[in-house]
Length: 161
Image (tube, rainbow, N blue to C red):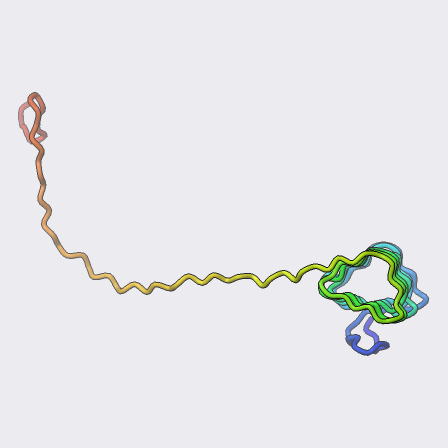
């Protein structure tokens, strides 16, 4: 269900888990997600953004493209592009991401694995060779060369049978 932007920078087409909602199990989707309630289990949004609101309480393994945390998270976090811990964040767990931002006042206990951005794919372009149109083959005369025959061999043209 889309929600109005409770936090600046949040897209309008974001699903919302409210303060009184408890979700247990695997959570996945194909849109951005704003969690202000409680989630236990796993959250997987590899192509989308996840925001944990100030009332959010998450006890889960998390994977999303970009993750912004204002609330409490206990579990390992994988932000494919970026993870942001805002001043009200309370995070216990390891973080793996390409970029991280931790505001002053945020609490974080765990390890950080900064991963290199994958280099852009290298495209090898072969030179293009343009061939000239082929001329029709010329009529050539064919000359047959006969090798000398050994004694006792017969020629296929011999009429002796």
